Length: 252
Ligand code: ZN
Image 1 (spheres, rainbow, N blue to C red):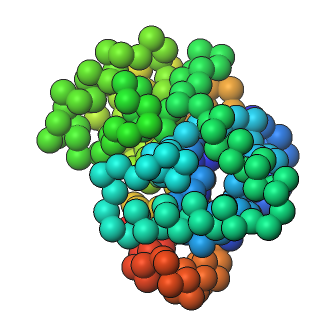
Image 2 (cartoon, protein in one colour):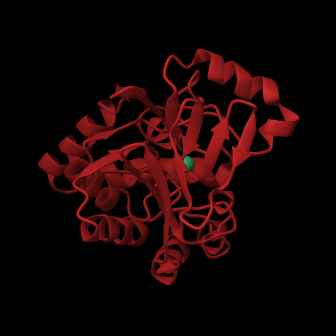
């Protein structure tokens, strides 16, 4: 079994809760699809946990923004990226500081394993392209082009913070449409599977999201965590917009 996590966004409470759930299930392999950083109050703690626990981690657009430059970010996201950089830079322990920067420098834009492909955004633009559920109706071409670019049958992604499965009709199935088990069986159709967001869900469900891959079965998991603690840290941090805390309660 493999746990696939994404979009942690410096939310230490959510990440700890998800890792505890992964441990409770006896899962030892963890893949991280990026956006460890950005928006949230605990970049150092989240980086350290992902470095320690994940078998690999990809580069998300927010990780990229902290390491290089924010591009096409809104004001709150850009301020958070610059503050995150400062927080990493102000780590007093030089060894820790250097290890984190080195890890960020080495994040992969995409990865392939066992016939599966892993990206943060989309198959053709692995760091930055959003595949939204509405694209099925408003921009089906975008999805079809991405499916055409896939040499593999199955791609895992994050980035939109909305969990679910794109199939190449194109169609989007949220976990709620996948029956009581909220799981999807990887078969002979191409699929792009969004595992959702650990630290900032945006599907109106504030619980932390991740996915478990068990043979050919992908199970979507949701877990409650202590949002109050994360939101309070955001409100207490003058560099982080208060909205970044309140949105956590609404899951948007
Ligand atoms: Zn994200």
